[in-house]
Amino acid sequence: MTNIPALVPTAVIEPSEDEIATMIAEEAQFGAAPEVRAAAARLLEVGFTVRETARRLDLRASTVWRWAQDPGLQSAIASGHTRRRAILGQRLESAAETALDALIDVVSDPDVTPRDRVKAAEAVLDRCGITPEVANAAGTAAVTVDIDFDERLARIVAAGTVSTP
Image (tube, rainbow, N blue to C red):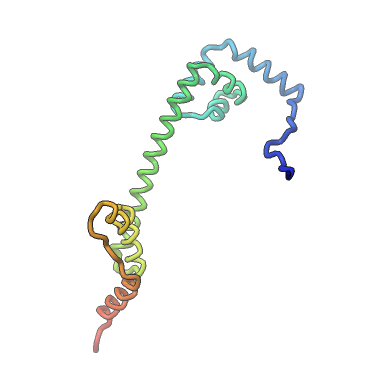
């Protein structure tokens, strides 16, 4: 049997006396202060993390984590998590729209090389779900793309732009 090193360190660093005193003082100062706890609950509910809530209230994160064991604060944390996910989802949708606009600009720009325009068009079609794999899964006819298509397109476009004397 081989000895596998422990993935979790076995040594625990004990807090210093000053840290313990500060934690006890903070707990005594804010433990009975319902308005501070209520402010923490509101911040957690609107989407701030425990660490950010502690920072904004000038508390130790351990104090807010201790409060987080309360069912009311657990509910606030769950609501905040849902809200953060919604906000991030909206930001991702906005970023996706910006990215799509950039791809459309590349596809539409006649100064962009035909190869890059075709790649951008493929990316747009791929993101829209118009790919051979999706088409086959839906039971419709598969679309095949010639590997040399972009090179042939580039030659065709180049031949059309060459002026004859």
